Length: 195
Image 1 (cartoon, rainbow, N blue to C red):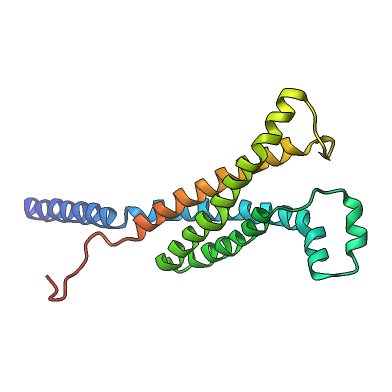
Image 2: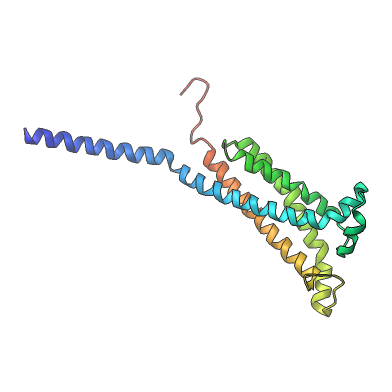
């Protein structure tokens, strides 16, 4: 009787062990999905923080465009005139909000749209800004001359470094987004006939 009980116990242990391995193999992407969701939320959070800074920087130009009377007070900030690529970059904040919204439901279609918006309105304007500011950066590097300052530092250095950090945030967001899309993709697709 002891052998029969022991045999059943070992058999149930083996079945439980293999069932556990199978279930672990089936849910293996989900721990990485949770980690990458957290990382993507952090990247989008940094993008929104950059967005607040850029909106504050664009505030004098926006108020002048709209024609608000507060424009006279904002002119005292002594901020260089905004560029067109900065206005285009603001649209990438909508892509970040879309990306944050899709994470709760694992909506891969909305995440794809968010990634496309990040590339078109996030990465491309930042690259254009880096190219546009490169001449000013080289002028400062060679002659140590600058026209504007931000917090006591040359504005070209502050903007160039912030654009590099912003580009890194966009690249990380795209990497985590693509990783999530791969994790959310089904391992195998069923055909029409269920085979």
